[in-house]
Image 1: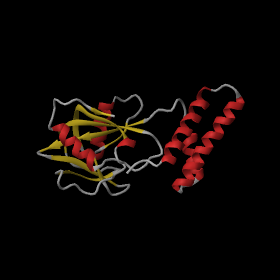
Image 2: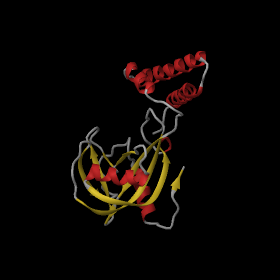
Image 3: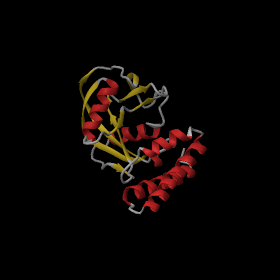
Image 4: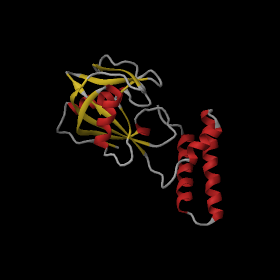
Length: 206
């Protein structure tokens, strides 16, 4: 599964427009960059068959110099099994995690996300991988995303549901449940087990 070329083009157009709206001074240039932003929204809305107004609103609220968004995932492995949570949004299972908040260190973010989504308390111990989401088999996403996978040590807590999840369980790599592929792929889970078993290896990165 790879990102369609039209989405890569639309992301590039949106990025150019956002940067131009951030730094341009000439009012005519600002009008052109706004038109370019609207064109990117129209392309995405048409190709993805979504509401054009919604896409315009999403792009309208993006400001400042465009950079990839940061997603963190907690890798908790106990007795050869890995912790997954069940997403309410699509019913698939995933490594617990989510967006990093502003002014939040990534290690603190992953500890918070694991606790919020699974009920378990953890300590981030090692950065296993830093991946470009576009290169690892995920379904297409409107924004460019970097994914950080942290090996986390279990320190307490108990499985619990959250406003975003309905279940937290440990699974063996041979018996994974249906995954939320927008968040976690089987190949990523397989790689996390390999990295966990080789603590002297450096961090994976794209």
